[in-house]
Image 1 (cartoon, rainbow, N blue to C red):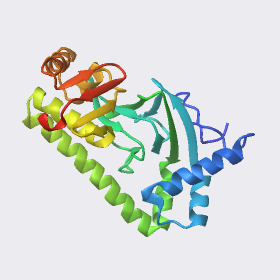
Image 2 (tube, helix red, strand yellow; image 1 turned 90 degrees about the horizontal axis):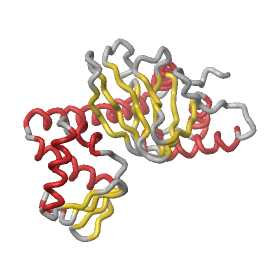
Image 3 (cartoon, rainbow, N blue to C red; image 1 turned 180 degrees about the horizontal axis):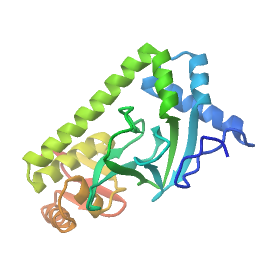
Amino acid sequence: MSERVFVCSINWLPLHNENCFMYEELKYWYLRDHKLFRTLSFSQIKQLCIITGFKKASKGEIIYFSSSDVPRIFLLKKGNIKIVAVDDNGNETIKDIIQKGDLFGELTLETDDKNEEYAKVLSDDVAICSFLMSDFEDLLLRNPTLAISYTKFVGLKMKRIKNSYSNLISKDAKTRLYQFLKDWAEKEGTVNGNSVIIENYLTQNDIAQIICTSRQTATQLLNEMEANNLLSYNRKEIVIEDITKL
């Protein structure tokens, strides 16, 4: 097995197999299409492909542990993933929902962070590229323009997470739920006038963890919204009848 196999039995596709050419082409276009790498030339993208692992995974699979001995940076090309933080008592909170085009993993390029977290697949299937942190650091050193773009990318992501934490502290559970649904609808919803349909890949427990409340409270709030004809909720989709009322 090559070094591109992730720990904890999370297997990355090896670079040398019968489908090697197909995977190399996939990696090239995945990387080329990402806004972070658009400043790189054809040859630079090809070089980037050499240090890039590739994986497809199914719903429920764990992709990443922060405690891994082989720190990596990941790029999600298809599907949705949740980042779950675990405190000293074993309590879990959803820290972030990763969507197509997002980076996750050791984004700050620091390995001394003691926070425990893992990434788990939410959608039916995902496609992911990954880089060893050491390889990615070397890439940034050799490409100053890319390093600047990466710094801005991570900075915006950290600012969004910080704002999310601020909302958790300053607002009640109902307001947090409404804000979460509005943000989700804006990012992924299908709009028809004021009505928005969201493909639902989150359980009620997931939503509760995201807005930092109990499952019972989240269920109660969703039921109240349905009773007030603000939305209809099931395992496959959420229909917000009038987004302007949230």
